[in-house]
Image (tube, rainbow, N blue to C red):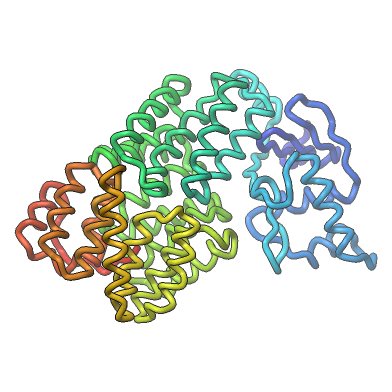
Amino acid sequence: MTAESERRLYEFPGFRLDAVSRELFGADRASIPLPSKALDVLVHLIEHRDRTVGKDELLAAVWAGRVVEENNLTQAISALRKAFGVGAGERRYIVTIPGRGYRFVAQPTSGSFVERRRAADAIGPTASAERLYLAGRDLIDAPNPSRCKRAIGVFRQVLDIDPQYARAWSGQAFAWRALTMNGDMDPKQAFPLSKSAVQHALALDPELPEAHAAHGFNLFWNDWDWRGAELVLQHAISLDSRVPDGHFAYAYLLSNLGRFDEALAQVRQARELDPLSPLINALEGSFLAAAGRPEEAGARVAQALEMAPEFWVALLARAGMANAHGDPAAAINILEHAAKLSGRSSIVLAVLAPALIATGNRTGAEQLRAELCALSETTYVPATSRAAISNALGDHDEALGLLELAYEQRDVRMIYLKTDARWNNLRAQPRFEALMERMRFAAGAAHGIL
């Protein structure tokens, strides 16, 4: 094998492309027939995978010197997606960027296919397990309660096919943890499941970066062990800096500790590794807002919504920015939509209440408080959400009592206590100072928004 041909071998989940012999192979090493121009499109997309490739550029590169219609390119993309076994709306392999073009997102590696195949054979994931795993990851990349629960089911299917597939366990760990924020799940129920999944993943692969990232997230969100989480996440990154999970989790931790410059450096790396993740883009926007950089924050959230227009976390961030810019009416419109998409997540209602108050609708905010209070009598409701509404209504003692309850509940949103500006009016209160000390946070005002 020559050095030149070696540089043009690419392997990505479930497939191998030989750009020299112009052949695409599946996980079983069988050649997959494709039209010649579809292969040319694939090669061009992979070799320019660091950016979105415009339609005009693809037409000029693949059909050089010929006048062809855009439909020729559409047919080539369709043939590739059919070969990969994905639909047009799925964010695996090739993603359509509306109004711009296409981007290859499967993170291929170039080099010796023989060496990588030997390593893959030793691990043994089948093509169907790999594709299911990627489908599960796609679900949790724009999480809501329904998608997280579906992802858990998908990861279980992966393990039915291949019980040694460690990343399926790390995916489950992510989904169970995400349900505490995205589905108002009781952390005392969710985190034992997430921690058990991490243990399974690490038992199968002690050096799996995704599993260590999930472990670090659990230490951060549930155990409030800032130093322990930082060490674990640094280790996750050291195992493979090309995996975005460690960078993303570490950025989340650093932002909530008020170490904004470090956080933004980490989340930027995560986004560069997974540029089409709605979750990473939306949270980078939130981290930028917390760092006092609203214009950049707005641009990043807009990018997330361009990719996933109904991603409620990005909508929540946009509404928070509208509130911060003195436009509560716009925030209300966004939040009412986000509430529907999130299954009336309490975190959305807690941002909606002060927006209603700002427009003179105190009754609406009181109704939201009553809604969550009544719900808390029969199921878990994060006390931080109730506290935020009470604080907005001016019931500061009640808000402090609910924050103290949140501490006892292990409410995951206590991780925002240091950087959430909604608590600034309480920071001089001895009870709040005591909570900050119990959470091992340094005192100080915040200008961050959710």
